[in-house]
Image (cartoon, rainbow, N blue to C red; front, side, top):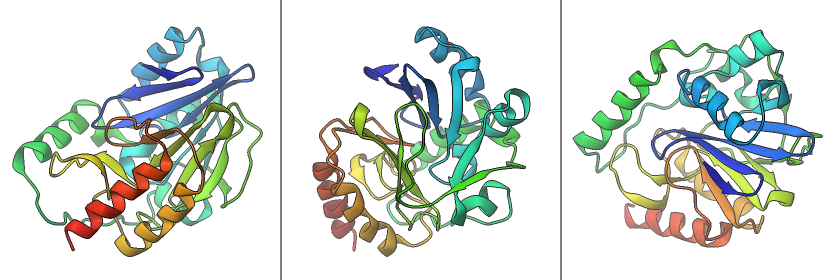
Length: 241
């Protein structure tokens, strides 16, 4: 789905990843679930591109619902995979993410999330065997001219991937616009976060970016700007304390 020129979404509001496209090719931000591979091929075709146009995958963090088919692209097509150095071990399967469900969970959203994940090959995710590491402030010479923004909290190496030229920022699980365990919609803290207070503090970095499009790994893309998204996340966090 094209969201704005040069930015496309793969997946849906349950699990999503994104394409940054310019005349140099395509950058994939996150790799969803293993079964999203076919959706990637279809989305590239809709944009008039192929797998040969992929220049890199950038992971917002190393959780399994974000690394889905990244190893397949690296192994079979030679596409390099970037991840923050603090999440490199997690992307290789050597670190354990938070399993805290938090409060207010509802059965149906949980069933829907896990049913979708299983249907999209969530149990078939391959961990990475080789990654390239990034740190906060890195500017990568890739389509979309992505800038790495450190957003620790959800995981030690959570990042946002900002494309100033496309006026968009992929935030992974630094926030969500649809809580997969409660079904609640709108900008809010994401579940399964290692360090919730640190994740909220990291939002200052997001608010400073002044991007129109905020693209979460779970939920509807937000085109109301980073400042309003951050304000609403903070309000949601305060309401459950």
